[in-house]
Image 1 (cartoon, rainbow, N blue to C red):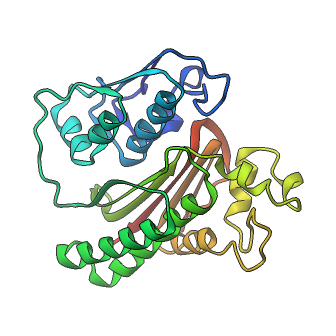
Image 2: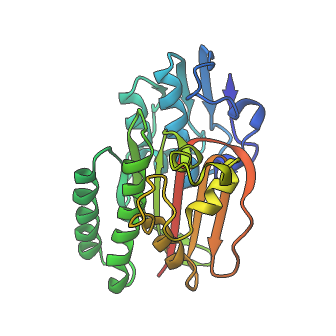
Length: 286
């Protein structure tokens, strides 16, 4: 099975062909013996897409598939993914990645490369490290540094506490320059049960989450949690409220549902190509 983006600018998993990418490597019926992720045509691989390129093959490899990532032929795109540590993490898990000729270029705007965590203590340590690195970096406005660290910590704690991911969770923090301006990006992804299955653990919510997209819409409301504990369910809600402020953006993608929240609009959650687990991606303007 070969999976690749249709466009040269690969932004997120929703752009993939669902006929191939829709096969769920978490499912016991997943029987693919060979999985190739083909990025050769990509001139840009955005951070949210890079997280899918990590989670999908790790899950497929865990199911016994022979996995290969075909790196972009565009040198700059490959160098970015190498600096993000995508290739190292895949190689360490036994995924084949041919990195010959790809230079290692320091990425001063990369505050935290892709990093694995699976415990609350890991998240606290990494979030503190992010704050220290931001303080030393001089990137963006200093008054935003605590917010960036807190947003990352909230997204990461959600993954640790609710995902039940067999491969752990992964996150990154980056200062990114877009045509529209400079931003801090915080991304967290896991290969776990997904938002819908997590909320279904609360009997009071089961009838309200028949689909992944409905579950995501519900998850960003205050005091909504699969634990049933009325004191919980404020972390993701708090991040969503922060991203509704001028210039902010939050993208959630879990299973075959996705939702974007920003100041300008909150789109209705929609059906999209599978993300096997959950992706949370926050964009904070400087």
